[in-house]
Length: 141
Image 1 (cartoon, rainbow, N blue to C red):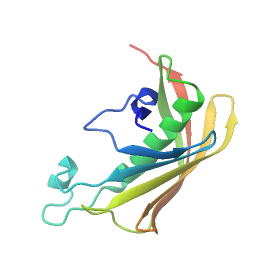
Image 2: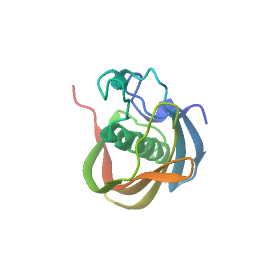
Image 3: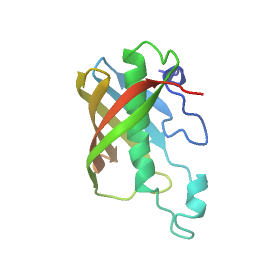
Image 4: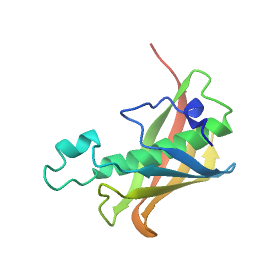
């Protein structure tokens, strides 16, 4: 799927999904290849580049936003927002050259709230797991 940008407002340099590998009504799998020239490596950390954990989380959130946008058949003047993050566990570092496989599952929907879980792997090793809640809200000027 190459049209995933139709479902999220994120754009480079703050886009942490390269492609959608698979998508169903309740789950999505995406991929992000980590290049050695990613801008955040200049400061995190010079001489020993490690992808910041919050950006690994962001890749999960953006994948979830794509899933939500697809379910809603587009953003329609709304933006995805995270309202809660729970049980974040970072188990391994993500380094230049790694390819993150990102999986997000929809656990339930109550009103506008989408309850989701995410998992990131590199070479079949679990890097990060988390749970989060997100909503599509009206854009404000």
